[in-house]
Image (cartoon, rainbow, N blue to C red; front, side, top):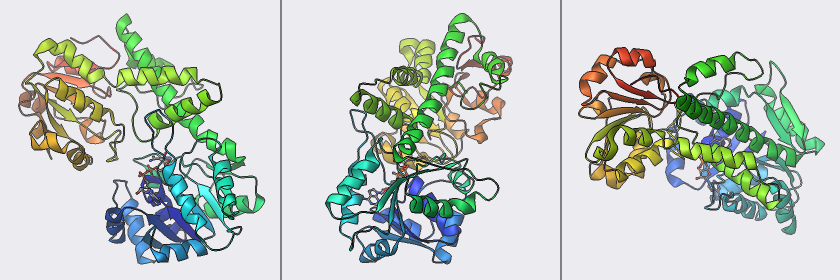
Length: 446
Ligand code: NAD
């Protein structure tokens, strides 16, 4: 099929490259000249395992093509495409609602095409407030365009995006139009050879499923984090509580890791957007409000523990941070707990020495003045980042931090303090090695 994709970010680029790999001709349009230049050279602007290989093979076969959205060639491609995916950002506005300007810019562009577009399916992959499909349909209709408008929410996880795209747990097709269902089913069939996991449903249900999933995942994380605080206050250990919980098959073991809260480009913004959507309909999302509160509080854990340990003597000290991205295997810093932490540490007068396997360039751009002034120093070697620091905080649980050389850590640190924001180290082992160790949700170690 001939496919167009608006937006070549985490979702759109994976979608475009993935669909090209199964024989479709894909025209991907973006507004960033910088990203387009990289992608045309086979370089992925984002860190995702397997993406560059997919990109290279798509370019080589000429089935994957990148354009600026204003290029005449992209307009021609849109005119030819059977399916047009929309994967532009829907970021959070200050009031928590979703910023829909990029979605409607795309619709403005579609309005300039020739014909009534009734032979095309326009598919939102972006996470959009429920009812957006109806709004898009009405907006385009006013301009004489009548494509089928469908929802096909994206469920990929950053860090394993290519793998998730190639082997999706399910594909949701939100439209009741039988031809569009058939077309989108055909497009996804190659990824479903072992077991059919395509669910078709109404457009509004499809839009809401995405929010329901992300809200539920956020709920699990905040649940275990709140339980961790209680365990600590009660002299219990959340690791033991977790072990006792996850053997119950009704509960399961996913997304129940205590830590320093959730971040990333989806969970915070989607839960906030859902709360705004609920309020508009006089259906306040009381659970989500509490889940958000717990998360905000949990994200302050590292700095709170440092204040407990150092009192008013924090200013002038240095801390080593291991891990900056919002989760392992990505370079994404959107809503990463590290960003908030770095800002708070700088307010406390604490100097930062950081390492991350993928996100250091992004931190350098985000905090360029502080990097320039030496308030934040970035190191290619995680052990170099420890030299002269008075504590190590484990912020993101990249696998390379999971079984480190503790003797080396101890010899490099000025004070043997480890704040384990992801509970990956063994508390007893830490005590035996002479560390002052703090994990989330236990007070068993000095
Ligand atoms: P992103 O910021 O990485 O990508 C968006 C891309 O759209 C950027 O490259 C931007 O330059 C481009 N763009 C902006 N305006 C454009 C326009 N008018 N025409 C063409 N391109 C334009 O965002 P993302 O993480 O890929 O997220 C996209 C959407 O998918 C969001 O709604 C998000 O909530 C949703 N989503 C994201 C994930 C994820 O893990 N990142 C997962 C599921 C769903």
